[in-house]
Image (cartoon, rainbow, N blue to C red; front, side):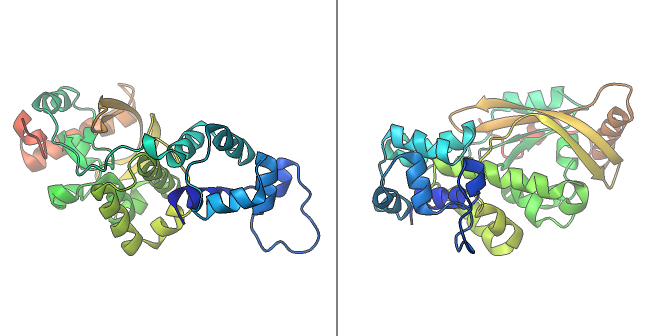
Length: 290
């Protein structure tokens, strides 16, 4: 079954007949959600065509069919965009490898926003650079080799992560949905395949969430932390695209000055400096380069 077929099936099984105005039917339904014939009818395509599409025997549905399926499956804007990418092989980019090092000027920018914790991540969330507070915001991440520092790997595999975020499951689902969005545009990328493969082997929770085929892109918001060094704090964050070609983003955490959250954020920065010493800009780029 193709990635397109897997996505269609996963989303079909999540739509209840009542959600789209269909009677539940008599007896026990063997299929969770919609049956193939029900979705085909709602989308205005033949049952045979839809079956071939889901099984990977039909790989190039027209834009009109894609939009009809998206409407029938009640997909949101991001999920519809993901479906369109999966349905069009010409929209896929060549497979790429690991993210490129960050520019030295970004290392200087990370330093300039202190005491706000900040880091730069690649498209699969490899941590490419961080200021002291940004690295300390994820306790124990600095103990990992630089090549293994990835916020999604940390979320699922580091023993501290589940206590660090009270809403761990919600955060974990967002991580998986973000990886699904990356997979839609670049499914054969070696770095993506390696990360997903590792997490499927090491984390049953990741495997269950991966099969849900939820799709989301990382955005701004607020996050509650229970940090072992500074206690509970709630930080707002902004995500800035800094290299669209390579998918690099800078994540900056903030709190209003004069609040306990801001005080905890400043303390975290100071504690990080006490442990590591005052770094220069060249030390901030974990994988920096020219």
